[in-house]
Amino acid sequence: MGVRRTIGVAAAVAMGLVLAACSSSSTKTYFETEGLRAPDQSCPVKPSRLGIAERLKKIDEGNGCYVPDPWRISTVGDVRLSQPATLNCGMAEPLSDWLENTVQPEARRAFGEEVVAIEVAASYSCRPRNNKRGAKMSEHGYGNAIDISGFTLASGRKVTVLDGWRGSRDERRFLDKVHGEACGEFHTVLGPKADRAHRNHFHLDLQNRRNGSTYCR
Image (cartoon, rainbow, N blue to C red):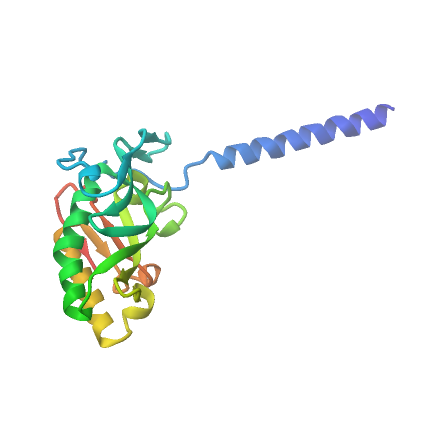
């Protein structure tokens, strides 16, 4: 009986150490936040004035991921989002301006029709940049970024970043133009030119850099 009790106690202690280790590792922050600046909280135009949007409760995960004024956005103007995007309030206006002033004119020029939907690959997500453990927190963690992987035209034709970037002439022209002009509305614009991680989508964000610079690639 004494041997059994000793073995049982030892097993319980070992299991306790394993559970403690798992608990400790699961609560570790897997991204870096040093040097990051939360986005400007100003929001001159409510997303609900630009399309179908619902205001959400403040997001605060306690580890750096923080969105003080999040909105669940389903449409921007007449453009439908493939899935509702959870974004910081300030993202709505530049997204609307880009769609109205760049995407639609370029779609009419390239295809003779307008865009009716965009494929949303990501919006708010509490994670490191490019999902690389230990990297700095992504602007997605502030609800300050959106990833767009494709566009649907009125005819039903789909133009994706993955296939269209080196696809037909009209698709190449359209994607190159909307990617390049996005830098006028957003502070960071990444696409297939940037790296392999962005070969299938455009990343658009409003990163709040100290020197006010933009980065577009």
